[in-house]
Structure formats: C-alpha cells, structure tokens
Picture 1 (tube, rainbow, N blue to C red):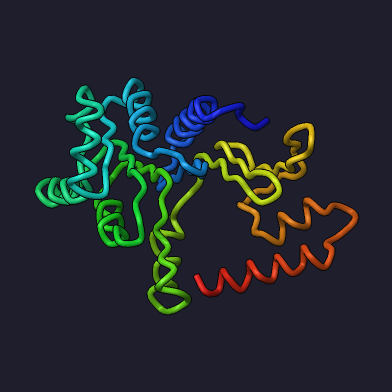
Picture 2: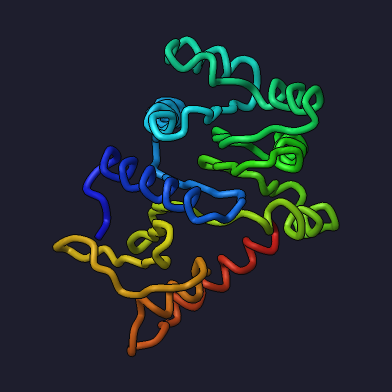
Length: 230
C-alpha cells in the first residue's frame, strides 16, 4: 500500500533504512522520494534526527560549505553530526578512513568524484538521499560507462517512492519493487519486480493481457532513445 502522505513515507523510509543497515550488508544504499516541489533539506534533517536516535554516530553530509552551514543553522542540536563532503574527506585522510553511517544529501553529478572518494574510504554504510549522480552531459561515452561499472553499480535501493506517468513505483527494503496504477478510485498495485523495472516492463505490466498499443509502444521507444542520450 502506498503511504498516504509525506510524513507516512518518511516513517516507511526510516524503517526500510534501518532494515537495510541491519541486514549485515556493508552497502551503498539509496533513498528516493521524488515528489515535485519537495524541500530536501528539511526532509534530510527529519530523517537524520530520527536515525540518530538509534544510531548515535550517524553523520549527515551536505554537498558544500553553504549547504552545511544552512543545515547546522536549521538544526543546531544536530550541528556536531553535520558536515560537508570535503570535511569528511579531510577527516578520512587524517584518520585513514571512517566508520559509522553516513547520509549524503542530494549529491549531484558535479559531486561524483568526492562521493566516490568518501565511499571508498568509508568502512561503514552510506545512504544517498535523492542522489542524481549520473550526468546527462557525459552521455554514453567512456566516462559514463566507467561510472556505471563503478560506484553507480554498487548502489542498492533501501527505499524508493517515485511517481510515474500512470501511477507510482515503490520499494521498501527488504520487499520487492511494487508498481501501482492510478485509477479513478485511487492507486492499485498491479505488479512486483525483483529489480527496478524499466519503462517497457512498467508499460507491459500496466497494459496486462491487452498488450501495448501504438501510443504506449511509441512512449517506450522515446524513453529508450532518451536513455541513450543520457
């Protein structure tokens, strides 16, 4: 069942993060809540505050000094556990690495190299919140291929709630991915997947026995071409 609102989704995400971290897998975990107009920093601070109650050593990492200062201003009680990616890199270089749980807030393609270094020198788990590390400008060249074989290939989904054109995708570790269709009376689960379904798999599941019509096929082809560009 889809969460009723953002706070319900946050509670569900927190449970999924805890389950992922307690699974014994040393991993790079992603959390995605892709709501239009979402204010990411307040969400990150709420999740971090809840996480530190069960994992006191958790640290929240922002992309740069400005975002770090803003986060510390908005959550002075958490200031000691908030740092920038560069701060974490300096700490790791001084100590030969780092431990505990790191939560990275919204890392962008321009942060890729720093994120990769922080993850490589970290001996604990890392949670990437609404990360967007793939760079559309890189395209399908060698740099993109190396990134997909490296850090991006190691990412596992702890939690995802992603609106789609026809409904929503949801995954809460350790459960499978669930695809929901938006009907006039609400959202209805239509299929489960072990791995995140691509657009063609989603379209086939939504079409059911009727199969894909011309319009749906064209949308899948458009999405495939757009994926090649990105």
